[in-house]
Image (cartoon, rainbow, N blue to C red; front, side):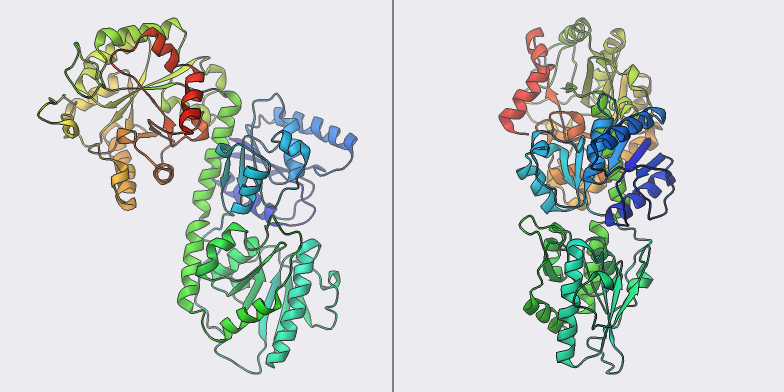
Length: 608
């Protein structure tokens, strides 16, 4: 994809470090990446262009708007990723009327304003780096919850690794000073934070009669008041590594700094520009996540240091209550929750959703069929449509101008591989489950006759030759294509998706079993048919949010069910709502089930 990262940097901040990591990963994966900002303080592989994105001059803003709009067209940008309020505002206006996706990552509390509440200027999707920001966007600004998500700061496991350290708090050398690093800007709220913590820590160590050496990283001691009596070593480090953090006995920081030091295995006091979170323990890790380690508190505008709490935290360190085992557990948990590779993939998937929605922003009716017998079945499960009625359905779709698309084709549109100029005006997705013999012998020829295609959700177990999950005294078996005959699907009107192995409910499995079902069924079908398998259908339409996440993590582009999902496919691409089709559908009922208002009605009725 052609991606633009839009920033407004006048100094190095966590937002630029975040963007830099994304840019480098996207460049390595073959995307064409551009970066526009006031200034550049971290090296990246992007094509850079300086622009005074943050400006208070209206005339200057108009000039920026015109310049950026020309830039977007010239370089055929498909998605803009903004990383600040000023960047979001400029990006919002510059892409007006253009079919360019836009998402924003919000790293801090957003200043309330009438315009923000009136309309969302942050783009098609908003990424909050912690729950506090998400809460503000959802409940203070009333933004669409289906377009908001929490994605944490990505941390590379190759750049930051845990290594055991001997704690000097319990292995004392009375002549060697404790090395304490206070990391972060020394201007604004973080400057107040740094000043407070330096003064209080110096007093506490003096009372304890223990030597201490302070290191100030990322700022200047001259910016701080009341610290001239302290011996402070300033360090200017463009980007800290695990080796850098390992020099210190204790780190005081917030946001990305806290993450990096904790992964390295250094005891860390989380104190950000909003609040003091204290010594990070397993017991308060989730609370730290929610505030980005003290940087975000909707009820705070200035960091205040509770001296007694800091004293307790120091006592915890000196008493050896914080064991190396807990420090290692914290490191491993953060590496899992902030895994850079998974976060990069999620962000790229958001780019694709944003780009798709910018080019097609209506519901795509997705219909679910099963059996197409020649005559009506005596079955308690009303999941068949006779060949005669199915032909009438296809006549209806043709008459009303529908053109079928498969998930394989949708994947190519969302990724920019296929130009949206060829996207149908009235798309329709027809899906079939299980792989019944009548689908191949009856449905496929009829689909071809009307120049339609369908998505088939096939069981990965090639030995299944009937619907064994429905067998009973009153329910006769129905033949499923099995064995070598399954190769006939390749010449049919169907494209193949996964339906698991043996039609088992994902909700009845453990996470390990469910992930194996998703991953291994995809691999088995891809090996059997030499085709990409981009979509999974949850059996019985049964799913839950965790299963949707697992489908993404195991490599699918989409997953479908029957009872939940967003109003639009790309609002929730791993819980896509399918419409049940029954034996006695009429043109009127088909008209209802393929209309956008039907999806809105169903959604408002069930709120899912």
